[in-house]
Length: 142
Image (cartoon, rainbow, N blue to C red):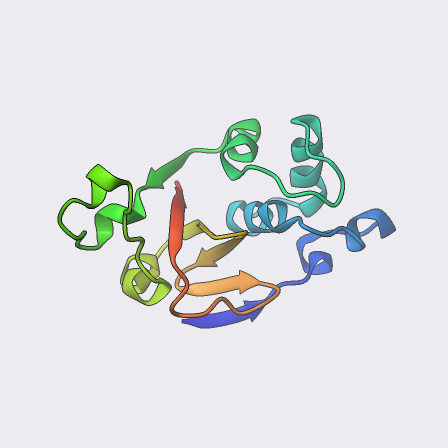
């Protein structure tokens, strides 16, 4: 999968407060996938209770922005071992396994401890996410 380095300034973060922000991957991913200014998405997250330099729930942010998205359960995209749902040990697909799904469209993906955007098969983030990372949640922007 291709990768495009996307710093905060490229998303419209202009003030010193926004360029020094940390743990804002949800804000950056939403701003990139929704094609909205970083400052607007950051303000929406702050209004919903996001604290500075702290992470934030992606579902809460998307509902605050009133954007049409479809949640895709990644566990349904790969074959599960027998009895997986009974014991709660669902197997999530890797980024490589779902890459064909991400070729067209705008997506927000959550892996353990991080959120990033994929637009037309290209990762938009500040670091490369490995091909073997397990995708836990997917939102497609309509």
